[in-house]
Length: 426
Ligand SMILES: Cc1cc2nc3c(=O)[nH]c(=O)nc-3n(C[C@H](O)[C@H](O)[C@H](O)COP(=O)(O)OP(=O)(O)OC[C@H]3O[C@@H](n4cnc5c(N)ncnc54)[C@H](O)[C@@H]3O)c2cc1C
Image (cartoon, rainbow, N blue to C red; front, top):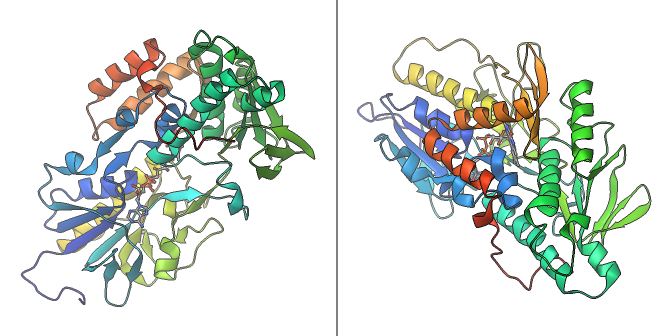
């Protein structure tokens, strides 16, 4: 179907992706005189910042993901579709779903990002990345199964390999995974096994760059490196992984045998750029105009991790949740103004609220535009900030009490091995 020409019909806004960007765009249009269809291939909105806790058996999946229908049930101008968008026809203003087409007056593409293996896609089966609940439960299964298998084997070398955990990439996700696995081995599981000492597990964080948490100041990076080492994490800086297979990895021409290798080294945008045949940056993010619309398509907006946006100083806006939320809110205000025939808001301006990362259960680093701090106090600020981020998606009280319980009990309820037990790391 071609563009809507019926003046009696309300504009139809199609939003693809119910992550932070898409959800905040839909929310921003709740009082607008438009009909919205939000499409996601998952039936849940995922709070990705805490995925590493599901992957390391600290939280259960239902603590960090909520059905999209439930979140939007009271917003009567929204219809939710569980489907995957395969392409966009920019001539006819239609999105192509698995078995049909849907026309739009405005389109918001908020399809996020996926892992990038820098030309080594064949490493993915041996070094899974962390992006979805399925990834997290698969990693949790692999991590917990290696301890089970180490308990059973009589082969010393194999036991050593099973108890080696390699994390590739020392950005926030890599640092958080390494800290959490070290605590899992040294605290949570310490009394659970009889033949192995889980505390002897090696957790090795490999980073090609010269520091951990490269987006932070040297002072906070150094702090984070020391905090990781205190947790027992071995930090290998300035070395890229050159080979990865079922035996482990090669780093600096030396093999590191490991049954569990986790990939936290790179992201690539969703294929939205190819759907629009638009100009993209090196990570595949669509270069957008000042109002976040795609060049030559003023009714198609691209936001969040799949958009290349510049801040006021000309630097790239980071792929983080607050940026996606701000962009979602902004495109909602543009669409609403246009639908109501009002003046369009000024160009999008990104406001950076800071960078934060946690290292285990007692330490974090926080860099705000006006100050930086680290340690236990930073950890509490990190926790409160995450609860605050959830306001609008879920009751912060429910989330806070769940987390507190998991914190006190070391996530006992989340330590389940699900999925195929035979198909485990070899
Ligand atoms: C492990 C991890 C930890 C992170 N930690 C932090 C943190 O601590 N702080 C922070 O600020 N940010 C963090 N981030 C980044 C943050 O989560 C992202 O920047 C943010 O989620 C981007 O929002 P988005 O709406 O662009 O995409 P997403 O939230 O990724 O949402 C994209 C949505 O689109 C859907 N989708 C994709 N393709 C299709 C398709 N073809 N058809 C239909 N649906 C589709 C997906 O199912 C998904 O629901 C983290 C990310 C990860 C992976």
